[in-house]
Structures are given as C-alpha cells and as structure tokens.
Image 1 (cartoon, rainbow, N blue to C red):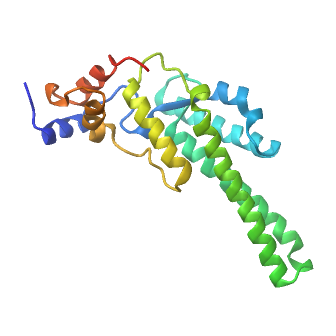
Image 2: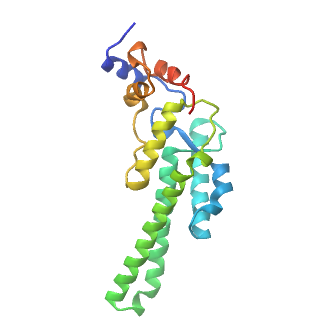
Image 3: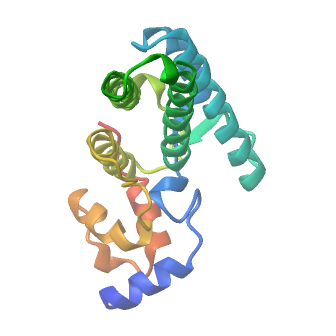
Length: 207
C-alpha cells in the first residue's frame, strides 16, 4: 500500500524511531574512545579536562533520559558539551580580566580582551574540528542499530557543525528520511512510514 509523501511523513513523525526522533538524539561518539584519544587534541590540559567533564555530564543525561547504559555522546550532547566548554573558557577569561583591569589603560585592556577572546574562539573551533577529523576513530558502535546511510548524513552534518555556529543536528529524521533513502538507492514510496524506511536502510551495507 502506497501513501502520498505528506501522509507518510506525517505518520513518520508520530512513529517512534528506535534511537530518537532527531539527528541530535543519535549516539555519535564513544566517551571511552574520546578519553583514549584526548591526548591528541591540540589544546591545553585544562581544556581537555573541562571537555571530558562536559562530555561525562552529557553521557549522564543520556543515560537518565533513555535508560540505556551506553557510554556514548549524542550529536546534540556533543554540541551542548562544546558550547558549555566555550562558555567556561569565556568565564575564565573574564575573571582574569577583572584582576588586571585597574592596572591597564582602557585601550590596552580592550586589546587584551580581544586577543584572549580570539584564543577562546580558536580553541572552540580546534575542538570541533578534532571531533570531525577523528569521527572514524571516536564513533560509538551501536552494532548496526543506526542505518549506515543515516550515519553518513549525520557525518555530513558534523562537517557543517564545525564551520558554523549552529546546531545542524536538530532535524527530524522523519522529515528527511525519504531523501536519505533515495540517496541510498531505495524507493521510499514502497514503504508505509518512516519506521519501515528506517528498517530498509538498515539493510544497506556499510562502505
């Protein structure tokens, strides 16, 4: 039985997909693997430590929300962790600036603040780039629970995440699953809803 695209997408939104309704919900990287590779991140040890702390927090939230004891960080959790890391770096800079504000002229103070905030910005993009460049190594193994074409689309969004200050993961899977299926050589019109398309995508072999 074939449904029209609008009807199938409407049903797909209402259906419960196995690991979440948006790309932000999907497990992306392994906390264990991040810890094992964190020494390769080109930042200070303090930044590394803070990043791990933020990731641990996101993993705890994931476990509590889902009931799964998975040692993973979702795409949305990664975005939040890096955002919170940057916020902490800015807070540290501002605390340091307060301690020297009275010893500097206003122009020197503004120049120092600009330089330090630029360094925070560099750290922010260094961290994001590190995840994108190492995603093959850091990827959380769901044992095939996420279809390979969905993983490929998620990785493309990770590339967008690196260069933009937006969260490209907050997209309904049901809204784009027809496009994902078509890219994978699957005719989405053969299936009644997003869940059936998801199951069909799981049969696509990893390349």
